[in-house]
Length: 339
Image (cartoon, rainbow, N blue to C red):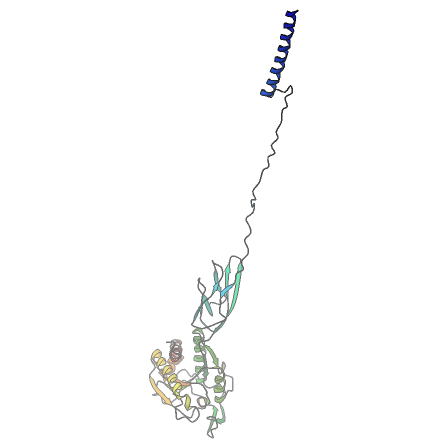
């Protein structure tokens, strides 16, 4: 009995030990009778940086002038500028004004020109007026038919003389003076225009009827100086060129004497130097109506004697006329201080 009780107590202790051991295992190892498997899902977000598939379009910069001029005087230069690089410059008329690769415009002769600046397909243009260095009046003496009607030799004068005399003619060439003077005047005009001057002619044909007063008045309106072209007549031995002007004692245009005398000296000296024609010097005259009605400095150039065979041949030759024109033009340049 006692033995049985002891066995029962032992069994009870064994059962308690087994239970205690099972609980210990579950706590130490987390050995729950059911094992939970946790599946973890990681959401991955791909961040794509902003990229430009096309180059950002550059803002269009218009082509404009930074510096330009509306007028330039012949013989002068001005630099034009635009806001972009790589410019191609062009002039619509290179005879009037040329332009360098750097945009320097050189004005050559009186007139208007378009200046263009080009960068790629962009183009801008500027209208430029080339002003003349000076305005020169040229009176080709005489005309086909003279006019023997009378006119006053000066403003308010009682003395009168023919409105336009007939002139002389070449003893060798038989060329009338009115033909010779227009030949030289026309060539001189071309020469002066190419040198940057503007030219006003009293006549451009032979069949006109323009008095000496009218010739002076026409040139007075727009010109800085007047050049009157004539040729002399006289004995066959008379030879050479002279320049006529109104002296200080002239009652009509005496105030112009200093400038007219200097103009006469410049033209005559340069003319004789260029041609080799003998200079007969200056001649002060008070009886020239075309001079006495002038309000601007004026000279009358007697280019040579048409009654002298040597002078006559020379003045009608191509080489002679070129030198005559070159000499007169050089004298004008000197008068204005361009030489």
